[in-house]
Length: 153
Length: 153
DNA sequence: TTTGTTTTCATATATTTTTTGGTATTTATT
DNA sequence: AATAAATACCAAAAAATATATGAAAACAAA
Image 1: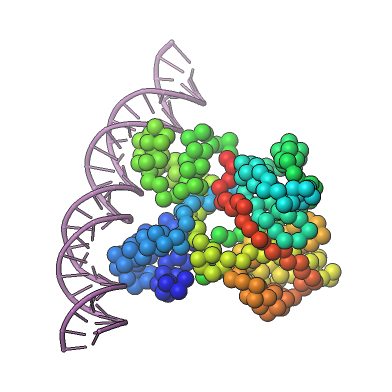
Image 2 (image 1 turned 90 degrees about the horizontal axis):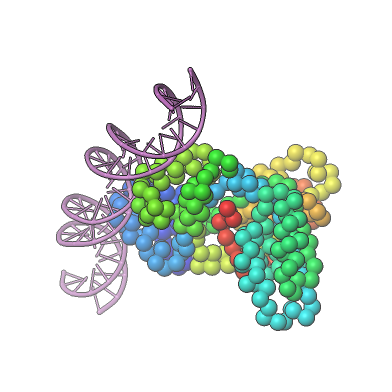
């Protein structure tokens, strides 16, 4: 972070809003030529500031319009065991995020499904079959106010 | 969704894992030439299946290593009012996501900050100054097990 | 000032994107 | 079934962009 100057930060800001901008256009925004911008981007990739480039898709258009946060509590005996809970979670594609949290529950999952009946199916036939899961609490998302992948840098 | 054939879905799958793949390489994976792949991508963009292309950055390297979910309850009188809560939320760059949820709380925020003291500063000096906020509950993330932007298509 | 290092520019080359025209293939229509 | 219309594909050309290279400028340290 201390290695990054203001130009680097502006490049990162741009790329996390639109990574398909070409070097020429980005260079002109920064009042530079293509070479320094190109080399800075490559350096930012090499040094791991930029992890990957992805396309963000429209959930609703792809029939995954329902978002649910699911809090999970492990069974008492499993708390200290290095369980394969994590392995199971990673394998389920409906679970798009999983956090180990502090508080009443052990994990919080973000789940994307088509509708309520597919969520029911997910909980009954997939989530509940995972070993060591004690109980769960589902928090349904009614609306998405803000959803950004861009860090405030 | 019904408009998408298997080739479209495979293109989307690839692009949401790595959007910097070039058309030629993508085409060879699909046993096609560049033109149909190129045209399909353009159509998927035009039709809104692909919303945007972004670079994903490393939180920790950019000093935003602390994630907190913050549940927010609005004040009673504000529940029905079309408050400018939303406008205020969108303006705060630490809040990377905001959901209107069902359950005990009205909103859930995902917040990215550097450390505990910056979170304290955020809550005290920014979040709490937003009108109509009743009370809040902070859920601290200890570990990120899974974090994908790719939809299970 | 001198030396070494870093950053940038200008330009050339390699690669990729985008366009174009033509040919199958499918779908609809008569 | 035959014809027309639309769709999806391929091959190749043109345009734009990415990448590489050598020289100039800016900067830092001795």
